[in-house]
Structure formats: C-alpha cells, structure tokens
Image 1 (cartoon, rainbow, N blue to C red):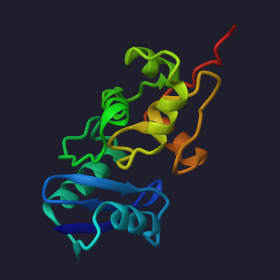
Image 2: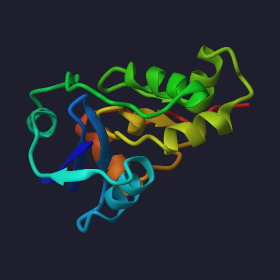
Image 3: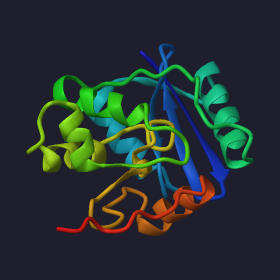
Length: 172
C-alpha cells in the first residue's frame, strides 16, 4: 500500500497530511517533525511505501489554505477514516457541526442516544485522526473549552478564526 505524506505551514503551525488513494487518513497538529504521523502510520499501515504528494494531500492542503484564508467553511476532501463503532458515530456527528458553532460532549452523547457517555465521546473526539477537517475543535465542555490535541491555544485560535462566541458555563 502506498501512503502519501506531506507537511504544510498554516496559521496554527505545521500540519502533517497523510493519505491513501482512498482519502485523507491523518492530519497531525503541532507536529513539525512528523512524530505523530510516524506513530500513526506505523500502527495502521505497517510495511507501507511512502511518497510525497498525492491527489488527496494536494486537495486537503488547498482546502485547508482556503479555510484559513476565510474562503471555505466546509471540507470536501475524501476521507479514509479508520474508525468503527461508537468512535465512528461520534466523529460522524462532529463532522456535521457547522462552521462557527459548537456542541458539548454531552449534547453529542445525547444525540447518539447515550446521554451518560460524555467521557466516551471525549475519548473518541480526542482520538480524531483528522482534526480541523473533522472539526473536533468545535466540541466543548459544558463548563468551558475542554481539551484539544493541538493544545488549548490552538483550539482558541481555531474557534476565534470561526468567530465562535464562547458559551457560558452551564448553570445548575
């Protein structure tokens, strides 16, 4: 199997792009040396042949640059998401969160018919291999931002880029 791998510079730092001929499989955040991409590829594609470029990576880079330039609010690049079950369901919901909007972990859990599964939603969201394009930065805790693989400063930058108004913590 051939794995295409590239690195692009964006307003939130260097991003690693990894794809197959079927679609994008990984976007590495804050990953100037590609260590996260290396680990992901080794786990999911042992023995793969590496090449730079590839149609999918070129499309992903184009769309990401358009997003950061304020010209794109949705992504159309093909994805080759290597998840199943609950994690795939969570990321399917996350992918549908509109530009400039947020949902809480609890709201996603409830929408999946599992209102007590907020931690599981957080774990699935935290293991998102295709951040920004599957906009896990748009998932927030009911009492604040929650976590983010690229760090909270990057999450804030992405939410500010989309002009997201911070939610007030839930009142009990």
